[in-house]
Length: 213
Ligand code: ATP
Ligand code: PRP
Image 1 (cartoon, rainbow, N blue to C red):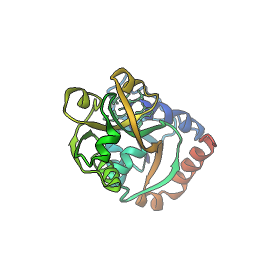
Image 2 (cartoon, rainbow, N blue to C red):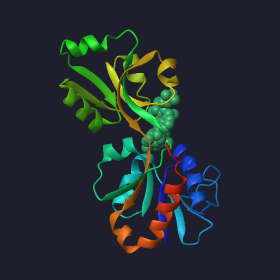
Image 3 (cartoon, helix red, strand yellow):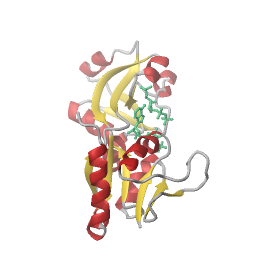
Image 4 (cartoon, helix red, strand yellow):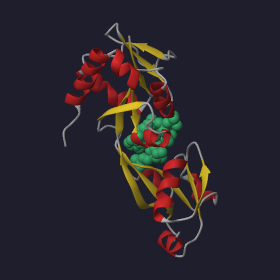
């Protein structure tokens, strides 16, 4: 049995065409079912639904053989025990620093101010600001980062941006682009040895279905 870990929402939806290219269809709709293990048209392949931030953990410890996860989640978690064969070029966005439109970020940085930064990505934010030599107090949040500067909880946020609509709707502006993000296929290293052939076939099919840029 090959187990693929996916999160509901955009990762699940955007992975479906890649699975189809590998000749695999999920036979139950995750939005209509409470099931966490979904069968596929291949009796030897199943999909497990986990929280987006739990995908690397499932694959690292062998709860799943393969998984699809954002580079943001992967880097925040750490790559230990994970083989990362492919950039799937789906769920594309960027990790950025944003502030209230009236906040003079460049000046605060120039003055050496200590910034309060709210984010779900504390490890990535710590590394980024340390590299810049900016002192920060990090505030860990689990969602709706955009609210933090609006309520005075933080001076800045580190969050994902795609269209920029969420920032705009909350009068925030992007002041630094930390990195480009897309979803990655990750594989458990032991599974790669023990189930080499079936995993290689899935990885190859995904690779041929990824749009070339
Ligand atoms: P969790 O449930 O663990 O809090 P989440 O709600 O962040 O996770 P999703 O919103 O489905 O989960 O995001 C999954 C991945 O999709 C992210 O890790 C990121 O790589 C990517 N992503 C997030 N937001 C966007 C966006 N607006 N546009 C494109 N890709 C995005
Ligand atoms: C993500 C991210 C931003 C938003 C950015 O949230 O956390 O809030 O997308 O996208 P935009 O630049 O196109 O507006 P998402 O929509 O995944 O909601 P969630 O945080 O509740 O998962």
